[in-house]
Length: 195
Image 1 (cartoon, rainbow, N blue to C red):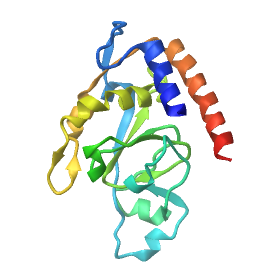
Image 2: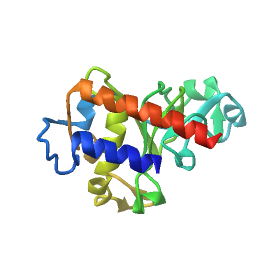
Image 3: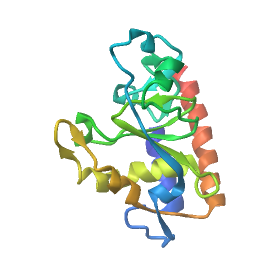
Image 4: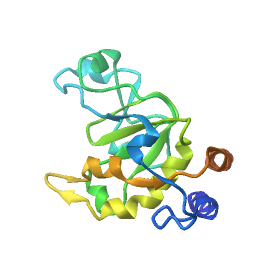
């Protein structure tokens, strides 16, 4: 219900990002980000890589809008000796390869430093252009466009260039900040309800 509430607030403030009825200027997703980071998997042959403290997020962790931890954890050595990259808090995590993509695209914000596996991408948002909360819910509401392009090879996946080139409306930053404050208050309510 809280997710539905936030989505309705988004539509109320910014309009549907698919049709952009308020006529905001549009910008490519890649231009709202400082960087977009791919994931990786440390060698499974070295079991020592998997007994660390660093969250290693995979699609099975992507069951809520906020990621505070993961099922699997890796070591600093695993990061140094593989293609895995450290992702700063308040980035957007997205599953780009998984059977779940037949139905929806799991998208979340990480609340702590994490790493991700090769089935995911992390979007490090440029705070001078957009808030992470705005971009996340814009992507959530735009997923109907992306789901049309899901293709099955060995696993269902989305062509990454489509995500990078996706146009999103870009309302003024002060309006995005108002939305971000509503999202944060709603998340505090969610935490209380979960407790």
